[in-house]
Image 1 (cartoon, rainbow, N blue to C red):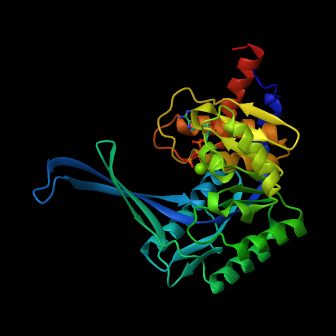
Image 2 (cartoon, rainbow, N blue to C red):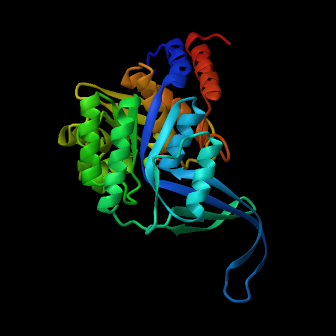
Image 3 (tube, rainbow, N blue to C red):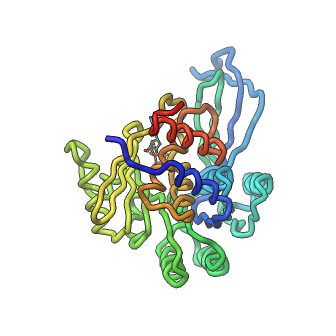
Length: 337
Ligand SMILES: Nc1ncnc2c1ncn2[C@@H]1O[C@H](COP(=O)(O)OP(=O)(O)OP(=O)(O)O)[C@@H](O)[C@H]1O
Ligand SMILES: [Mg+2]
C-alpha cells in the first residue's frame, strides 16, 4: 500500500523548519573517534595495537538531536548536564561551532561528561570505551535544569526529551516539564528509555523502537502483531497522544487513539544505522511545529531516516538533502522523471 501524501505540502513544511524553535532536554554526550591503523598484535595480550593517526569529536546523545535540528535548518537549544572537564569544554566548542547558545548546558563539579570513545582502524570499530556516571541529578542540579526550562519554555515551539538514562530525566524534572508545557500549550516529543516510560505520561508523541515498545508494554516479540499490540497498549497505559514505533528495516508505525498508519522504510542502501532514532525525532518534531499532521510529519521523518542510514559517516540530514528526497518522492508519485 502506498500512503497518499501531498509531497508539495511536505516540501513547503521543510522550508518552514527555519522558523521552528525547539528545546532539547536530555543526556548530553560527547562522541570521540580515535582513528588509527593496526600492524601488529600486542606482545602483552592477544589484542591489536592501534597506532593513532587522528582524533575527532562529535556531539552525541541529546546533543546529537540538537545537531540534527540545526542541520535541518531549525533553531534549537539544549538543556542538560556536563562535567567541569575537558570533554565538557569540547561539547561547548562543538555547540559554538553550531552557533548554539550553551547556557542550558550546566557544568557540574561532581559528575564527568558522558563520553563514548570508538577506536576505529581500517574502517572497523576495534573497541568502544564508555566514560559515564549514571547517577541521578542531585536536587541542586534538578533545580538548575528546572530554572532553565522555566525561562526557556515560553520562547520555544516544542520540546524534545532525549533520555539516555544518564541522570537528567528524573521524576521532578519531568513533573516540572509537564506543568510548563501544559501551561504554555507546547507539544513535546520523547525518545524514551523503557524504565522511565511512566515519567512521560501525557506526551504528545513518544518514539520507541519496536524492542523498547514491546518491553515497555510487557509483551514478547513472538506474536506477528506485537508492534500493533504494544502501540495500542502504550497509548492507553501512559495517555500518550501518539506513539511512533520505529522498526529498523521495516520502517515505522504511527499509533493514535483511532488510527494506525504503517510507513515502510525509504532506505535503499544501508551503511550506518546508528543515530537514526535521533534523526527521526528531530524531523518529526520540526514537521509538527511546521503544521504537518502527525502522519505527514512521520512520513518526512521516515525520509530523513532513510537518508541518514544510507550515508557513511553522516549523523544528520540537511534541509536541502531532505527537500531533494521529497522532490524525488513527487516524481515517483506522479510518474514524472
Ligand atoms: N536497516 C535499516 N534499513 C532501512 N531503514 C532503516 C534501517 N534502520 C533504520 N532505518 C530507518 O530509521 C528509522 C529508525 O531506526 P530504528 O528503528 O533502528 O531506530 P532506533 O532503534 O531508535 O535507532 P537508534 O540506534 O538511533 O536508537 C526506521 O524507522 C527506518 O526508517
Ligand atoms: Mg532509539
